[in-house]
Length: 218
Image 1 (cartoon, rainbow, N blue to C red):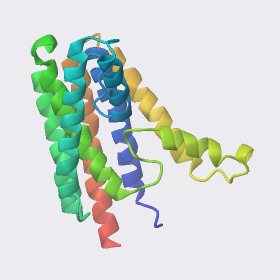
Image 2 (image 1 turned 90 degrees about the vertical axis):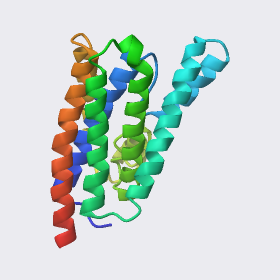
Image 3 (image 1 turned 90 degrees about the horizontal axis):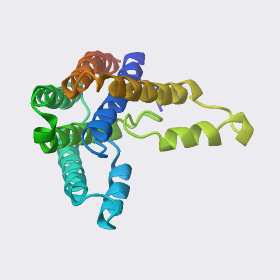
Image 4 (image 1 turned 60 degrees about the vertical axis):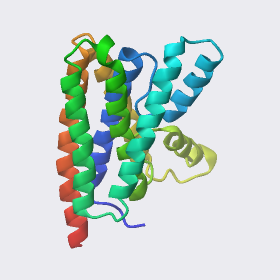
């Protein structure tokens, strides 16, 4: 597999950072709901159905899952053929959704929580579909299970050659730092958290667009 341009790698790491911020906002600020991690939502939904969580958690969980899937459908259509234009459009829509979520978060979060869950779920679902089509190893941007598995199972301790270990470690660290930033900014307000994610998303979009153009020229 051809190594993607460095700009694309950096952009995907920035998107991984955004995931940490967004999931901090959703889990800590919107009630045990993941905007990006659907495994967690399915598990929490099971807990709620068993009566271990409030009934509102069932509605919130279904909202998150449905919004994520709707975003993934849109992302799948937009990324049917990967081109600089399709990438810019797809990630531009994600940026727009985050921007709208920032504005919505200026209102009382308790009132607009369902809307925020929908907007963030749409954004993360769209991105997940596009990144899946890019198929760059160890940079899914939304989950780390396979990245952590690869880091351990391909390590010298397991008889492996430690392929792409720097990328794998970087992905783990940036999501950790994103979650740290998101959790810290919650003391300022939900709008501040999502605004920070929007800013980083904008930087990633510029890098992705330029990286995709460079790859297309080659």
